[in-house]
Length: 163
View (cartoon, rainbow, N blue to C red):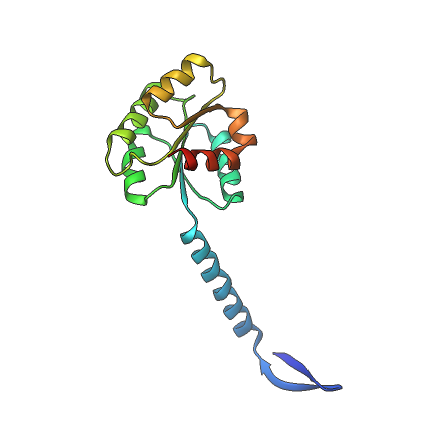
């Protein structure tokens, strides 16, 4: 048991005894409920990537800027997940499977329910031809991998302003 004392004037007064397990359970419940509420109210950012290292780095950075990241490994699932989960922004790694990824971006733009979602596309080296093809397919912003890691918060703000 844990005795809780309150200072009343000059001498502490014993108010009540608390069982430590009860205190721990109540504290843990408050912590988990506040964590759950925080996670539900954060905007959802979908990350389409097959590369584990970049996906984990972006997941950590998205959590750091108060987004709720969800990693999608298959380009075919992008539109259905974005529509059902009400994504705020989509980050697309074009390096792994460029043809299915481009098709997924086109389908995202063609769907009435998901056409408003900004798409940030990135690759290891985003040259002029890659940028032009991605913008033509519907990407809002095209950057290289280093830029998306270093300037993620600014890119998210800019993508939301554009769309």
